[in-house]
Amino acid sequence: MHMLEVTDLRKSYGDVEVLRGVSLSLARGECYGLLGPNGAGKTTTLRACLGLVEPDAGSISLLGLSVPTFAREARLRLGVVSQTDNLDPDFTVVENLLVYGRYFGIPEQTLQERIPRLLEFSELAARADSKMLELSGGMKRRLTLARALINDPDLVFLDEPTTGLDPQARHVIWDRMKQLLARGKTILLTTHFMDEAERLCSRLSIMDDGRIISTGSPQELIARHIEPEVLEVYGEGTQQWVNTHASLADRVESAGDTVFCYLRHAEPLIATLENRPSLRYLHRRANLEDVFLKLTGRDLRD
Image 1 (cartoon, rainbow, N blue to C red):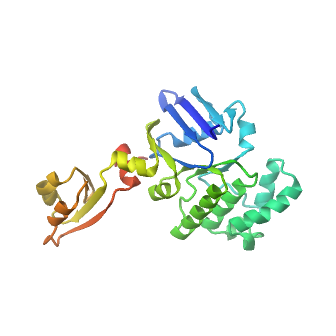
Image 2 (image 1 turned 30 degrees about the vertical axis):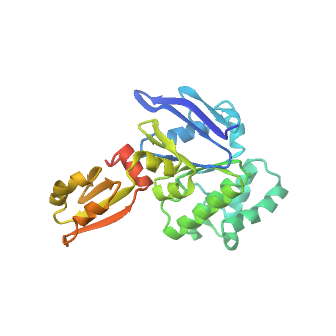
Image 3 (image 1 turned 120 degrees about the vertical axis):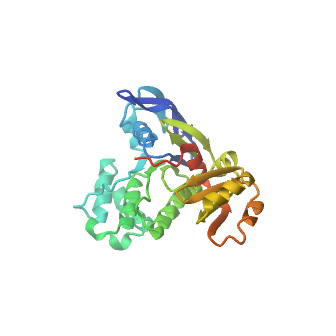
């Protein structure tokens, strides 16, 4: 049984079709990423999986239960970390966990045993009696993750869990996600950080315009869609240089004052940059961000 199976999901708002036959499935114990630019349909997909939006067509099986028919029963076995901070500002750290646990009907004794472990897991034991105004952004995100685990869920939805966090806080969240995976939990992750998806996801799908446009492991997607090497060139005279030497690259893209050259062998092109002090360059391996930009474009989405 898949932890989540979505088949040919469709949803329209008026004349706008926001989901156009989305299909995906999550195996037990994997971290599955759902990536896409703003407006791609990620949020609508998640809301449909939670039973908060009724699709026009298609089917959803969440933890073996049909959604939206049995959405409430499925959500009792699910953990959700939303994009926005929805902690109760009037409660302390412990009270946020305690009250949230009561929504699931968890016995008081079980909560008293579980909460200290969650505080240790989130490195908030010393902040148990703190109010929300006393917490940093990273602490609040860790508390939101701890709260999502209060019912010991089999599947956890993480919707952009590290947005707005500094690098140290991001790495702490990543470590906690790895701990959850090591314990056999299943994670559905949405993120705009490609390095986060590449680091954590065993599989992922890239969405755009309401469709899944490619699925695979990060390494598979990079090998499938992108040349293995990238040369980023910028500085005075870049365009003149690329006009002369573009034939040495397999593919060339421009963004602002930077030219991105995608190649299988970069050495011949790098040689043309010698004795060109006005030009600077970065030679690197292709990554998931290159795949994302190739498939969804470089234009800004609002």
